[in-house]
Length: 102
Image (spheres, rainbow, N blue to C red):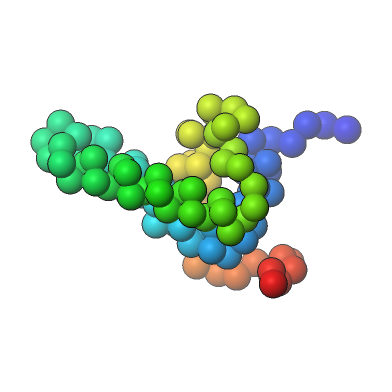
């Protein structure tokens, strides 16, 4: 049996709707904060910290540790997953194959 791809594993670790929501908001905050650091460091630092707080809150709902704790590659997989879902419109559609979370 083949190993799961990074994206498949990332998706598996991010199923709870609240975790998806916090990542949809937090990932862009973190990514935007990085280049802003050179010009607006206070704003960048605020965005960076709040973005990470949202990530960890989402994982409390998910009940799983953040993927990057098992492999730092997931620090890049998250933004790639986010952009892919935004570009394909999947970020705003409910996946009909998923079972509802209680």
